[in-house]
Image (cartoon, rainbow, N blue to C red):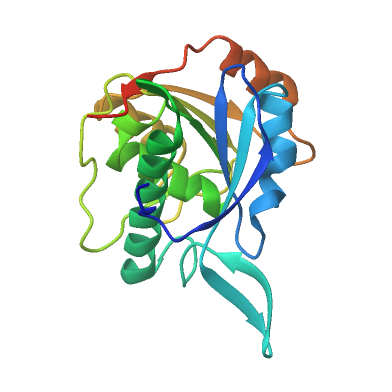
Length: 219
């Protein structure tokens, strides 16, 4: 038996013998299961895994939630950002190894808020380990020492839900984010998002129109 590469905690929210597979990345000060409503809205019959960061958010001595990195979303700590991205990559490799099949089905990532930042970062770092990305309120900060993309996106499907916040210097958002991801090779679609409710119909229609990708578990 192989020892897992990643030390991240995760919740196997729903097992299914039907496609797709969905991994959620929670927002700042949340837990692994907090992305479940988005995953069930997007793909109610999917295998759903809620991935949880390792860095606690403390109130006094008590952990009240978890964060993917330290610092504001527009200026994440390069150390914690890099560590979180590396752990997500390791977890994706673990999921390939855990599938008892010659060709492992690659997951869709659904990230919300800070989790959307990490989902977009994973798209730019390891697109060959994903079937697609949904980023709700997703932006992509410029992190010192990290020069994306690390691999061509090769038409990786990406759905952005843009809440229309004003542009921040040093953060890719709006039309600039769409253009950048497209230039890197992504197949990008963007929709407005007010944040009042989960965009169930839009996410579900988008995922139904995508064919999951597969990768040999031995490659």
